[in-house]
Image (cartoon, rainbow, N blue to C red; front, side):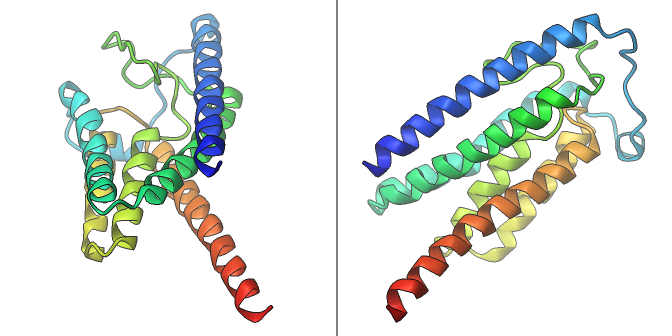
Length: 197
């Protein structure tokens, strides 16, 4: 039953994300000012615009490791929890994306065709959220805490490749940590409630 609820939540989050993305892309086409915003870090970092495709692969890597470790150790609830957390994050992302349309940084350079992304899916970075959440789960499974450097480095690549504004990446860090801590806190609270009752 738990897996079914997570699957339903995942499907709902995908539908909401696709709807928001399509709506935002339509609104973006009618915008008059499409000039990218000024971003201090984008200006300071080297221009890695030609390497934006690396963000997709590097974001998927820790997810694949988490999938492998969960499968190998037969801890299927870990992947269930990860999918649930990410579904919640993508619903929150769809809401922020729908209400705040930022001018695209690099859509005028590339024709991006993605199932779950487009020119204006800025606030906030899904790549950063997926990577950070999978790293938090891996740390929870006993991986060394210094692997937190991975999402930090990927965040710099995301900004340098002009995949997202700096604010998108920062908000992604905030929201991912808040979702992770909030849900984990609820699990701890239930544990203590059962322990003392």
